[in-house]
Image (cartoon, rainbow, N blue to C red; front, side, top):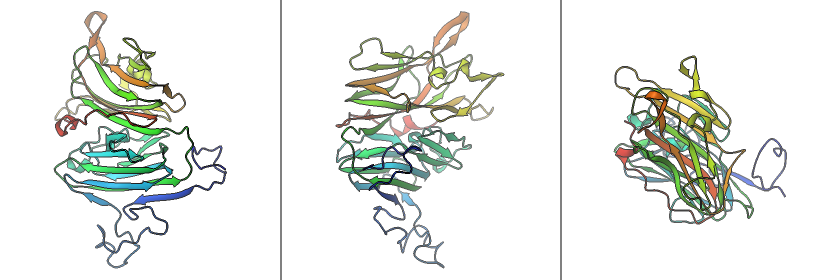
Length: 365
């Protein structure tokens, strides 16, 4: 019988024995018939005239240095969607653990996980603008409404945590929707890793992902670029996928940064950057200098390999050149600020993720 996974318009009418559950601050365990039961909570004062069942505990407070457990689910099952909002800047760290592993398969600042890397980590996560992302697996809606629809199967256990590495407490609203169902033998586990370099080394490649070991497929890249120099076009760099024992040269080599993100010719439309957010790719945000404190141009983009996953048998490394133009029609090896999230599925055990950059290195400055 249909197990309720891989939902799409073609199978939406099919019945299954899968059980739908949801975790939030109003039902920490996702248990059947246990939602909205809080008698005391963060909004007790607001609900004082109405009582239990009337939005008594809609969010959590994560104190400085605290790690909150958002989900602790016994399988088999699969995460089907996640919605979050609150003070989720670069000091709010999401981690996912599959099937009882001690090390995480996902370790990413919360806003970056939803491809929204320029969501500032000051003023409790507030930014000055909220451009939209309207892709298939990830959506960002006003005002800081973060959603994702990556299917994340697990066989024994799923554990999701949120750590506050900052000095100030923050609030977090969240809804984790999942199903309890049988998982096919060939289902792989969702992974994501975060990287950030404040200045890419001269004539060095920016590393988006490395150390991936196992069999799987790469499904997406979210990238933030902050220019550390003025003048001329900055995005000539080629993305490269080294897989299954590749040496000096990769199996897959792109033709330019904007080309990989499905744009062309510098995104230049009548002398201005043309932004877009599509089902599988987008360059949705351009931050321009304001003549005062915002001095650098910044860009945010994503590319989802949903229709064209990049499959590997044993290992994968992904790099991007930081390349622009200089005088006399010559390429310029730039030294820009880059931050990224790589998304992929693979077999367990999970590889060791790179060390999370410290607070100062993650900070948006």
